[in-house]
Image 1 (tube, helix red, strand yellow):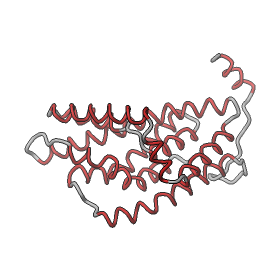
Image 2 (cartoon, rainbow, N blue to C red; image 1 turned 90 degrees about the vertical axis):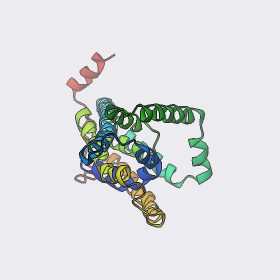
Image 3 (tube, rainbow, N blue to C red; image 1 turned 30 degrees about the horizontal axis):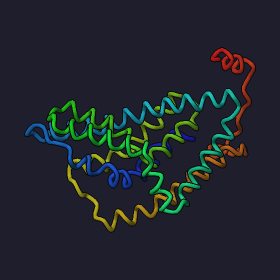
Image 4 (tube, rainbow, N blue to C red; image 1 turned 180 degrees about the horizontal axis):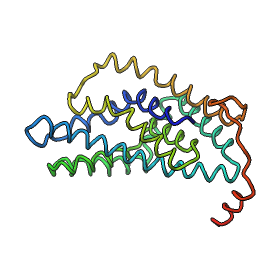
Length: 237
């Protein structure tokens, strides 16, 4: 997966982010009377999200690099694309059941409670921490970004991919934290209809990438692990 696509995924998914995380962004307290301090606080909040996404990208990029050494990257790429496709076409009732699982609820409840505590502290540094925790909220579009980071098969590329993902969400989330309801409901609903289409395209790209068709950028040829790489894997056992 090309690294620059992380920015596109984040940008197109940012309308979805406003729906999921917009209430948190709007509820952020205002510290300081100057416009500079207000803007700086909102930048810190969004920077926190980008940092968390980058760390997640590094972790899953490293995971992807291990898959290359085991010769599994093609299969995983096809599997990830298939899972994304299945999720897109799942009935809404099933998606609601998934989001209502006990683990999902526990994580979400814990993070929301932490947000309330941090917002009440009224310190600029708390805005950065809110952003860091915000990046951990369960979110389908973040999972798509993580899948892209894993497909880079390198922890530095994975971190860069998710950093660009976070930067893609930055403009609208920043505007939401400053202006509140910047996009009316009708426009948001129209854009949300396009999100599944984009997600399907991304899933198909994952599948094509795994098919090893030799198409530059879309389905490049995967090289088999070398003997030295296999020995490196054995050293990790």
